Image (cartoon, rainbow over all chains, first blue to last red; front, side, top):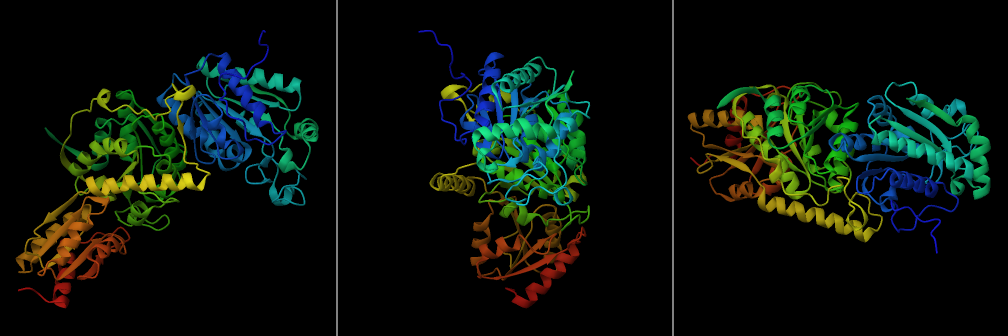
Length: 244
Length: 358
């Protein structure tokens, strides 16, 4: 019988620990497929963040480093500069990248490090139990903004792609969503491009993936996907912010 | 052939000759000559130099590079080293070899830019979170700093841990004649099968990690780390003894202060006071046995610990002396440095208080 669909070679045979309806599984698959498609097997160093994806080191079929909260772009810099021929990627959530790790991501981007960053924006801290993130929407409830995020108290959400697009360093910045098959196919193309850029030595590429967190949003998987599509994209518009 | 070199630059060159091929740093006085020197020298040997956006990023760049098996280091001074503590804890947890140079300045807070030894606790007792130790050297001369730095990567690789060179502003800024060792042959360095160099796949893939959710697993990791530290205690303790045979008062001092203390020993002996010196070269593992052996000798009346701090290493000296003899302290702080005469006076007073053998 012909095989029409299979697990990517760049994923291990370990079951994901992610919650039902969470986008991390899709994002992992997109990264793994992109790595496979650019024939990177046996040539990859992945950097896992602190957050829900901390266990990413169990899932990607490549050498993996688990690093301190927010510091993935710095560790990726250390790995890439000493091994420029390897494909180095950092996989980070919104607390990791857009809160505690803002200095690291901005300066890795400003230096134009030839790395690929996958940024999972689900507008909440997942692993620690649903606290407010730098990307939490105004009015969105979290365990540390129980009446909803308030501008006067908490400020506005940070738009990472738009912010990084002001820098000369990055070559490719795109925001995609993981909320329906069509958007996932677009995310796939963006992910592959972000890795192809690195392979051809073009420089810093980041793909921001608007993602679901049904557990901490208190929604069903279906409602979560709708929230990404209908609410998150209003604040975080999809599109290409830089493509040099 | 000997050449005249500034401490910071000599340490940087010794690091390169010892195999360092990746340096990540951030400006802070009084260690700026290290990154400045590296920014020129690293590209010349095919290595990597980056001025990071912060001390935090610098130590995490070291993490990323060390995890791939490259010999890598950072340098800083006290406030910057405070910022690196999180990274140091992770490096220790993930068992990554690297070297950290701290040219200590006065604190707390922004403190000053003059020499101090007030980071002893931070470096030797921890500083970052969790149960860990590093191999810590306290060189007294530029030549000793060069020699310790030159072999520091071998030690870091052997035990899979960070090595810290704990200097002070004086050591960094002084110029002395040094004999620079030969460039190490990097092809002869033992292979690091654990390194995430990107070639891993399937069963051969490597994971660098410090997360152990299962308490039993983490406990076993903690015990494994401490088994390594026991090996350090067995094989890596370094110290210098000076005129201990008949000493009635023993000065304990490390780093540049030990040089001043040695002059004080001479002054005291000229005055008929039998003084000696124990100079720890490794601060962890601490040379407790030589101190405790001396404390048991009848002619030894007292110890005087001398530091550029309010009294930090003295706690380890007291643990080694274990109440057998009195242990006094003399220190200067704020970036001030004592003269040999000051130490001699403090020692003389202690001898009077504790009675003399003569």
